[in-house]
Length: 350
Image (tube, rainbow, N blue to C red; front, top):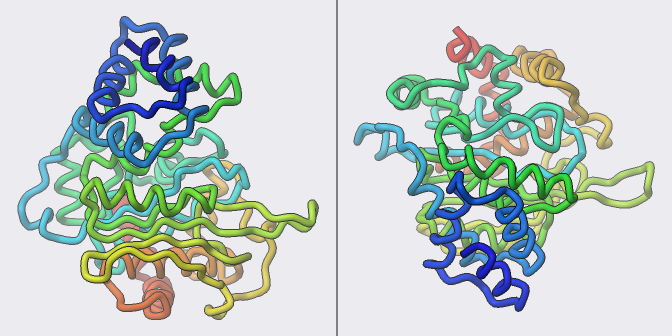
């Protein structure tokens, strides 16, 4: 069946919703060869995934995930995820993870979905583990942590058993230098089904399509962002899957009460210190964990703090905690300066 679908994709004919579901069944089937799966994923990527195809794959894979047993009170809250697709290959520290912890410290319920590093030195799972935060909570404990501590990490491999038989095909594609639809799907598969999301993507042209996908999946409030970064060594620009303090940001957002909008956000609207990409660079998991500790203790007050404040501001706004990005910036700063962020980290790592 995957071979048939691959031939269809070569002819630039998109998959229907039912075909996408059948494809997911085949991808998750251990009896289907990794080579055939990789050929299908390659054909889909070379055709170019449509928003409808991405949404169909996301729904089919979410249906195969393990659902956390969230109680009604927790489910009635705005549940936030702050996540990037990865793939910008810039080597910055874990900005989204730091922003997620700040939001939890500010009283937002945060279900952080993530994995270990693929294209960077330290993924969200790696740095949280280095910080002493458990990434292997079973479903009942994850639900309790979300309810009582307002933060739980959902380690993707543990919640998506179907991925066990997809990994080898993804590895084959990576060896070929071929990205796949899974580069987009990661942020869409949070088993806690967050109602609010701040998602970073590595190309500005992905912002609106991915926001449309989130909308179709039932997310109530979302902002999809891609930032520009000046690269002095090449006298050019790169894109980062976060809000950037180093250049303009492309944004696609929607809210139940306000509808869909696209815009460009200039970092000049915020009280930023002069910085270059080198000021935001991270290292391995231990180095990035130490950066976050220093930020939360108030010892790091330079460009790294600015980057975290900007992304936290957007996340707090998306979660409905503040009424503007400026208000979110102030709240994020207060959350650090009053010791709440460090206290939350100590609570989660205790």
